[in-house]
Image (cartoon, rainbow, N blue to C red; front, side):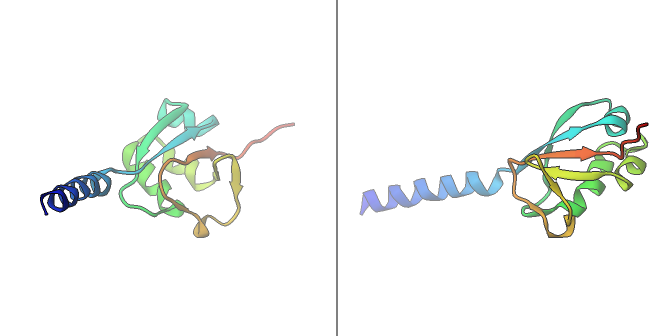
Length: 108
């Protein structure tokens, strides 16, 4: 009986640790996104999981207000774990992913 109680207490402590752990993603910034944030890379805590990729732009803008990042993100593409995301509305982040912000590229 004592062992059962100890096992239950241990399980509850582990469950609590997991439920309070906030999921994070690594965001890679390229070109104008890097200029706007002043960073090439950043670890970002997701407010909830799963977190819609479509909501990440708003979340990043809230972390970098007044930098012009909003304008860059409005025309940028996304990749998750080095795979281009063509339908961001179907992608949900769980934590641990590497998300790249890929602004439009011009060349000649």
